[in-house]
Image 1 (spheres, helix red, strand yellow):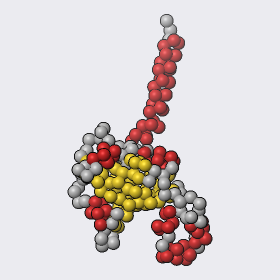
Image 2 (cartoon, helix red, strand yellow; image 1 turned 120 degrees about the vertical axis):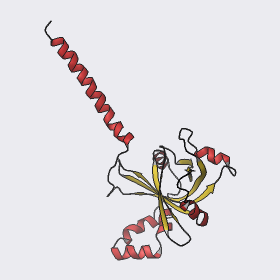
Image 3 (cartoon, helix red, strand yellow; image 1 turned 90 degrees about the horizontal axis):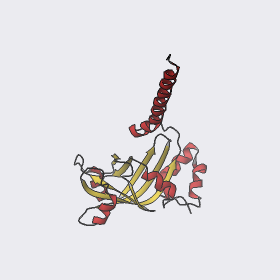
Image 4 (cartoon, one colour; image 1 turned 135 degrees about the horizontal axis):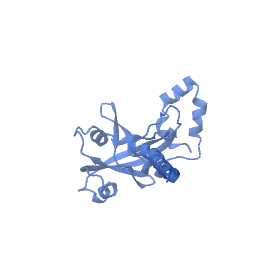
Length: 207
């Protein structure tokens, strides 16, 4: 058994590059691993549900890759089961580059980032486009009623492989909500200390 991602990505040219740069033996361990990593565990499920964005790569008929950033409220990328994820595809600039690419080639790759904790999850899969008239239950499963945006379709991805990247070279970044989570307790503590100081000064004032 081998890691599913190495079956996909360790092509002859990749193995040749590993040999040239001296990492072939180390990477061979992925081909001898006992765990395939093609079905999500609770660790991956919780990580996916906590994301508010990801990057996805598709390929056009001419062989050119296209990388797109997708964003939404936390949890907009849904885990449908341990081998399937999906998300609502909202109306955008109407170029339909990813949609067109998926129609021609179902293969897709995603990178999910947790910048504050310097964690990164890579996913490989096969995507399909689902419209409400075809499978309304799928659209309902990926919809977020609290997010006001028009859903044109759902993108459903069958996971072929996943892998965690090392944290090296990931620069920590924080969203506004994450910053508030750090700052709000400090502000509350500061207000409490100011109140205590005011009460202390009041008690010590001449009567």
